[in-house]
Image (cartoon, rainbow, N blue to C red; front, side, top):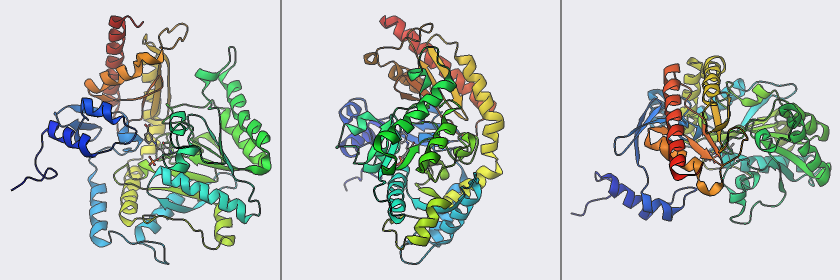
Length: 469
Ligand code: PXG
């Protein structure tokens, strides 16, 4: 009898061999991965994951910015099981609907705060952040077509933004490495600079002055294009995958003034920032701006099952629904009953445990305090937090802010020390970032910070030994 490699009990090397033989990973150099072998993650509980060699690792990235409610939540598994036994799938294309999708849309509408004249009564579902942003492009263009302004096609985004990996998502994103492959961006998407004060602030300029200057790059771009051609501006409240880039306080109010002045739609991509990450259900509330469309995914289910979507504000919904007829767009899994049932259980759990509120009043201030303390480390040029996410800039010279040469791969060295010592942090550019589960206690945060400091110490040691300092 031949053994089945998928069901047989395999050791780590066997799994790694099958992995490199068959599994094409996202954003991965496969030659490089094959030479090392992937780390095999086998189980999880609370804020920890374990690999196949038995190493316990504190997951300070919540999977990939998504496991906000932590691992091992039975209520979410139960919701999936119950829904699968009741109705595992049915589509919502041909005048049918399902109960979890309806309930979740109503729930999301009730959680999304009204701001000024913007309210959010409608939800368009997808299965990911990327698909949701594709839907945004379709909805924005349809909106302007219906209003008799088909020339309004251009969507302005920002460099170093991340809006997904589909053709539209990667085009909206401002990652130069992604644009370099596959003829991106697609037409009618353009980018302005990001509001990154540490990198782009001028000597003597305050953060608030920089925030206004950075926001006005949007106005410059609108005027250069011709306002009558501009359909929308899309941005993350804070840039997540770009390295936890936190805009100065003056940035968002000025952006709002500009989009209002030219009547262009505002898309808030909250795939990372919603569902408690910044201490609110939705992050536009924290910064006080008024989006027309809000992208969500990831933590809507705490990552237990794929689900994404767009909160469609009244301005757009009214036109699409009252004037639009059929909108020729949707996905097989738009409003998937199991995904929606898990999301409902997740939001219920987050509500009962008051996770967004806890972030706001307890976890965020405590994390800010811890990052103030770590700012004194000799490798740290800047330490900043926003809600329950944070970033460190690693520098060669603390006094002058001089950065390390890119070829030294300093953040990768740091990331390796994190992994080897039982901590997951993300390395982006010259920043080390975290976005831990929202269920952490102060003791968990203390333990995380002990591991962060240790990784920095080991990195410093290695750089000193190599003569890189
Ligand atoms: N918008 C934002 C703001 C995101 O952060 C997406 C859209 C796309 O979502 P999907 O579900 O299609 O992946 C994201 C995803 C990283 C990293 O390395 C971040 C994301 C995805 C993969 C890696 O930080 N964010």
